[in-house]
Length: 433
Image (cartoon, rainbow, N blue to C red; front, side, top):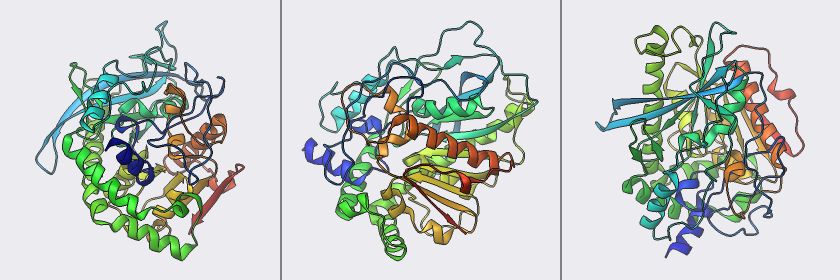
């Protein structure tokens, strides 16, 4: 039963299903390292997917792009969600520092992750230990609990949201790049839909209800996702019709509740930022967070879905970047905020209604020769031989970092940055209005 299920999920959830729920299909990009290892999808490549490549995995991320050393610290929070559930959150803060203080680089993720992932796979009927997602000795450019840089009076804040079943370290590649450039990046572990470790040592994995609903959504989406949607950009009218059909399907509507809960997690931690800034919560961030004119947010896959909902529903957020995610819960929404989608052709075919419904600047960058996995950092962290797109990994990392930084430089920092002027081979940019 597991093999057909995995194939269904691979076909239907390239915008939702991530590393903790089957073979990893995410990747990112090397800068100074050798070519990265490909990351496997949840099913073998088909004619509807880019040609698979096999490359040697590095043991470290590329060096961050900015002038700052990158610090990382962890804080745990608790709040009561709208469904009356008590949610224990962990938040990783990536931030600018002036020196690594002689400390060793931080571990990529917590050592219990693989066992938690295996537990989830067994629940789905797969064997444990089928694939190790990252080497425990994998090198980051992050250092734990450094002093915050004093070069600026305050630093702007961006949230990163991981994909379904993934983990808060999942966006380390882009968090490093942005933090080294002067941003503070906050990444949350989401109860029930994520895998993470709290500071007190407790660990959390996906809930059975989340996994059940994910499978139902995947099986429904498999009946609606044709090879054409994966490989061909639809005409405008057909794309609008298709995107509305996919987003309004019954299981898709049901599954959106998890994105809503994740958006509440983000808003709850955003509340705490103000307490950190005033010193009501003791930390290094007192008076150091630039929260006016607002906060930014981006995310991969289901995290991109969440980022859009947060941007729409929380006035403190100035806009969102969606890395190859869908728009469950946002059908025909006017986000009333700037929005940037970086994704595959399928992402355009799935989200095209936003070009019509959103009243603010809306950008869709369609990147060729990539798969869903190529929008996250497992391109560096994955082990073994896997399938990914054929675009050079360094090139892909450069595209994602450049567009994401330019978006927030423009709409959060109010710097004059013309996203329209950014051009890359094999990238089609659509903008409305």
